[in-house]
Length: 146
Image (cartoon, rainbow, N blue to C red):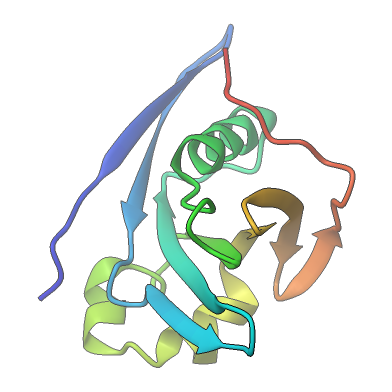
């Protein structure tokens, strides 16, 4: 059984507040080491579940801020973060019992953001919907929400 760590983020706007929980899906995280003639290269991928996800600017900004604060890019040659919205199949209980559903179902239905760093530098953020890239973002910068 994986340890459950929940990060709760609040977003406020004029009309309402929303609670968003970012839950690490550590059972899917991995680190990979490859060797070349010149150096060792370490690559990593981390997976997160967004509970209470709403497709709005506040949620997007909070996920950007979380990615910015929590990127572990410095020790990695290649580092990626994947964020999935919670659904009936993409949730901790279901994925713990059916881990293959992350790739069989969640990847094409509930993956909403992918961030990538190469050699410690932010490279790209993708916004996805139903398995399709909606916003390629080579020119997008992620920053901490103030």
